[in-house]
Image 1 (cartoon, rainbow, N blue to C red):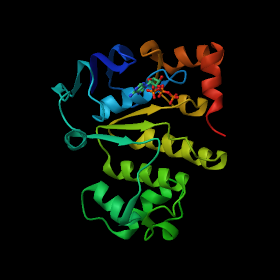
Image 2: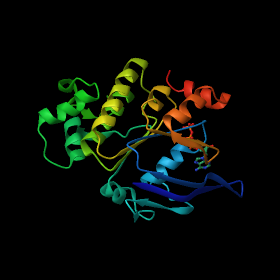
Image 3: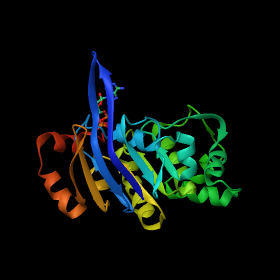
Length: 242
Ligand SMILES: Nc1ncnc2c1ncn2[C@@H]1O[C@H](COP(=O)(O)OP(=O)(O)OP(=O)(O)O)[C@@H](O)[C@H]1O
């Protein structure tokens, strides 16, 4: 269970303090939680604060009751937080199999590594020995990153807009991947998304706007109002996958 207690994140702008996150209080224990809301609302910043990439100006973060606010990304990863970037990282010199094996933390054979690739819709034999370098497309890289997170199977997996940079055809496969993850993952998935089809598989939806939690509740209570909602939320929901 992840607890965010009075989390604020300020930046200095033109000599003033600008509140990017403002007094956020959330407890996340559901299996699949989506964070959505208008552009610039603070979603990516919140994901980075959870992963340990940014340190909050105020507040505490607890994972299963343990205060992890002062821990680095690596220490948090060890405690069981995985983070998938909007723009995945390339690892020159390592193959796809190397990365999946590293992520799983144990020695796994080619068939098992291939299973993870198949689950994210990649034809395993074409990818298993490929180097994770600039020759992979953004969508391929994103799916490899999701396969790594599946192999890690941590307490909390955070995905920042997994749909970004993925074509519509691959996006349909990605939805299936997340539906599958929802069924089989042991921990929680926290996913930042503007996509109705992703929000549609969430147990809970949190709407972040202007650095604050604007709405929060079970999908059935939040999604209908979002779909008929304020213009800026609607455009944020529809603008993203092109
Ligand atoms: N280091 C920084 N300095 C100044 N402003 C910042 C900084 N980091 C973030 N911001 C601003 O904070 C706001 C929130 O940014 P963030 O990326 O968290 O939004 P988001 O909800 O993820 O947006 P999107 O839906 O467009 O991805 C934006 O207005 C952004 O420009």
